[in-house]
Image 1: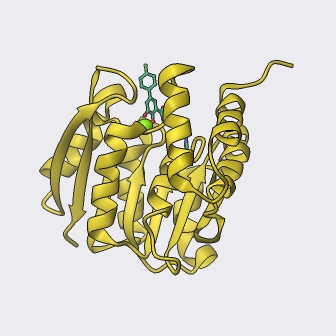
Image 2: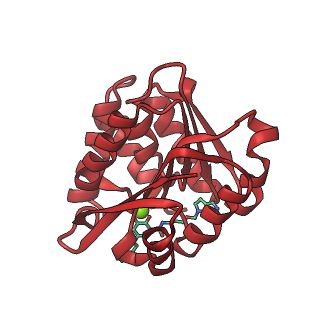
Image 3: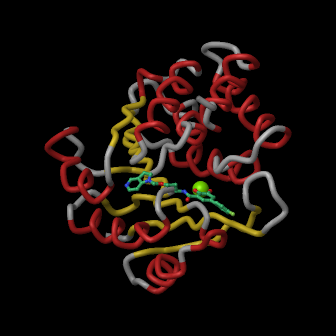
Length: 214
Ligand SMILES: O=C(NCCCOCn1ccc2cnccc21)c1cc(-c2ccc(F)cc2)cc(O)c1O
Ligand SMILES: [Mg+2]
């Protein structure tokens, strides 16, 4: 049977990246996506913005919605102190299987917990299942029509605290108009837009950083 794009991406990591070296994993995936096959990783340009937000925040408890092949998981986890925890949620079992191997190749499995399933099922269970009080940082990169309902769900479940930072990918392409309208107009958020480009292309895209004010 034909291989899948995520499998070919993993092969490129195994071939070109060094075990235990997260930067080499990031570079191998970016090279594969620029020169072989486009894939929906956040990419190097928006990835640098992600890096700066994470580095400034130094979060202990991180939630990522949308693992895909683990590219942004590796970007975030490599910047976290060893005691910090990143929970990443992936709906697609095939993507999750690839992501586990990419995260392991980077040597970051000790601070990452990959969970398979739907955000609307898992968000209400975060506290009792993972012993999480609140998240310091949430990266939204899953179904674009779930950004808004899941943000409201996280609020209702008490998973956000004063100062929690939400960073949303793809706010222009594919776009999340209802989410943008909410975080930019709600008195509970301080929001700002980081203009960039859709991964590996010249199309406009950007990240929206929103601080929950409690
Ligand atoms: O669709 C995208 N991402 C989402 C994947 C499914 O996520 C499903 N999913 C993952 C956890 C999870 C938890 N609960 C429910 C669904 C859950 C996505 C798409 C594009 C894109 C841009 C232009 C194009 F021409 C084509 C595609 C770019 C991106 O950067 C993206 O992130
Ligand atoms: Mg994305």
